[in-house]
Length: 108
Image (cartoon, rainbow, N blue to C red; front, side, top):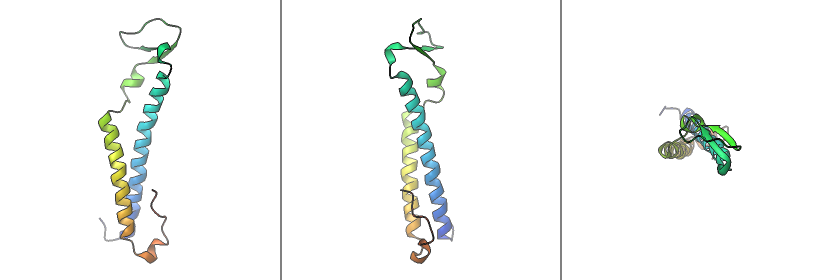
């Protein structure tokens, strides 16, 4: 922590934004996979021993293996966001009342 509470708050606000971007990236990855598998009866996946010929949709297995987040990664990302959010509020509370008026309030 700095001796400057405004700077602390701005750094905490930036941490919330970064944590939110990380969570949103993970959610996009999961949502893309869910979308690809929504009609799962017609899906086959390449680069696996289970590839069969079908007239349905084919997707590349590397799409699911390489970027797929683990449950721990999702939990860590969500925890980091909640922690950053709490830090943002606590640093904002330490800014003098008259100075707060010139700041954008906490994001969430």
